[in-house]
Length: 445
Ligand code: UGA
Image 1 (cartoon, rainbow, N blue to C red):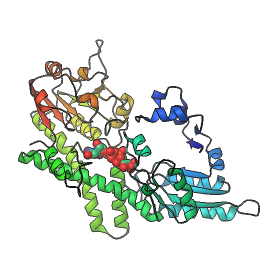
Image 2: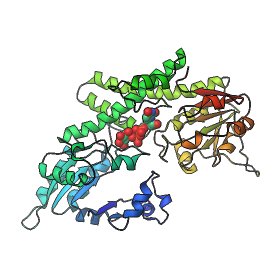
Image 3: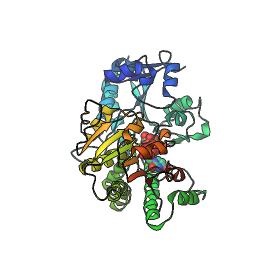
Image 4: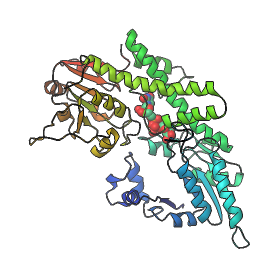
């Protein structure tokens, strides 16, 4: 019984969301196309008519991106609120009647104050006898993770609503109450809600950095990180989730949000706290570089003239998102070392990889074989073709298809001595070791 209209100025995007082929929606997310197919055209609409969308809405969710500022004050750390500000100005100008504006994008603490200032300035100038324009501002951060977004939406751990007046909080709460038990809907003040989102991501990022740091120690001591994480996770105070060592965290949020927290700490005169969180990022960067260096070292200190197959380019499985993917940093190091990379990913497109590496793929000869130029790469639909003639293979994303590969076939395809680097611990060493392949797994001493 609620009409949802998603508006965007990007025509291509909206065309994508309105397209007939539901397997080609702009975002790959398990379960999403089913929801879109059930609701699109009934109570879910996608449109470029931003003006109409704002004018007719009772509640507006600002869901634009808030990237890290590239230049100026706070560059490299604070969020660029350009798009949020533009949205607020447009809403201020066009909204009619009582309108609830909800911060959905992850914002630095006290952004609601900026939105409120813009909205209320306009409210004063617009109001006259016949036109009563009023606004409420709420913070309702999003906690869903890519790859499990639909499950997280349908069964959230909690929903957080921060606001200043009960009326608007109740109106939003009533929507969530339709499928979320009320005891899981938390009401807070605006600032707690904004900070909770940053803090939650910072805690999660810190947890991964913590286990990855232990993983390095495991590799040096002969311990096994999967055994250690199981052992510590059994302590109910620690818990077993989010303790998988890997190639370091990626994704559009963790780095951005931790840096944002760092910026806030500096801003509010807390340099020691800032330093604490900053280390979560630097250790993650170091961990990714260490994985790349380890590959180079095992391949006799040079990648020049060698072919390396990269399996997985997205930052985690079940998404086509490559933002801050560990694959980008690792691939760039290999390219600099003169390797030829054969890249496979079941969902990431060749064009996307091209943009991420800032490098076009290499030419192929008349038999469709790669010209193995130093510091080049190519894209493969077929995993086995990407492995043919490779000196090493690196599994960077934990896609299910990489878990049950034909190692007999692979051992005959790769160049000896062949190396496989499993940064996700998806392989069964007992199977791989049956063939003439060297296996390295993250966190295994
Ligand atoms: C993260 C949070 O988990 C969400 O709660 C939050 O809403 C979202 O950011 C956001 O702010 O938008 P997301 O980045 O989609 O979600 O994915 P995660 O599952 O958190 O994974 C982040 C990175 O950590 C990935 O690179 C993943 O491979 C890595 N990871 C995760 C590990 O290396 N080990 C783990 O045990 C878990």
